[in-house]
Length: 298
Image 1 (cartoon, rainbow, N blue to C red):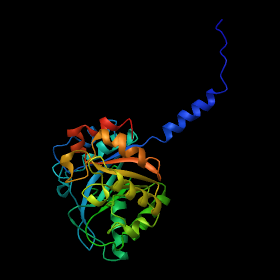
Image 2: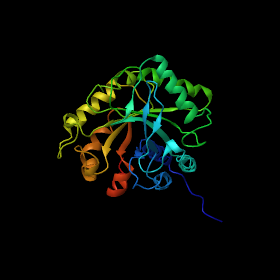
Image 3: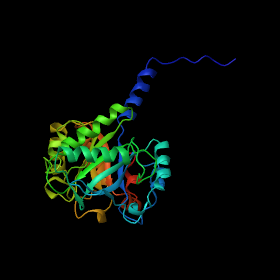
Image 4: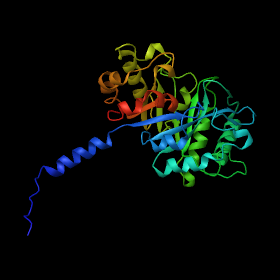
């Protein structure tokens, strides 16, 4: 007969502490779709590195324009060539990875001219990428998990209304995740009013190509100051530290993996609703193996 083991009264507390540590662990989000030489969407999700994969970009929409999806060399949506991504999207989701569609980008033809225009874009997104129905869904029948706002051109008009219209679809049974990628100077010139709605689940702040608020050569003070401002003045589910995945991914703001874990993360993880890091982009992450180097710390 086996000996009866006695459970230490400290064991439940230790288990709870361990669970709390796990619950505070961050996640990695990545943008996919802007380099035809990166691996497939399924490859990105099968890597086990990411919690969110954002398809970039729907680069033309609003102002009465016919919406256009630009996934670089991966597929041609205008000829129906991107519907095959539906199986990849479903593969990602089966592994617990949220797949989002990003609006905008650093270049493109987009903007909202009125409340009606914002409503029209929201309806288009619901019918063609989310839980609605359309005879010409660019990515096939797969239902994306949400919409990302990477608005870098034009003014701030009506993006708050678009967020409001999209958020209402969550009442129809499927949660529509809303995320945003503002530049680190606060407030963001394009997304300032939208981010004050409190509707965004995740805000991944771009701490690159912006010298006044990014990391530079061992000095994280400007980044920390900006992080403190963002996380105290904006209400969001979680905040992510947006970084280039290699020195080639941005003109400035690259944080070497060792510096991220030893200098930057200790300061930001204790402030605000820290969620993890966002990387631009999957292609550069593949080249530099950045996620694999930091995944245990984020």
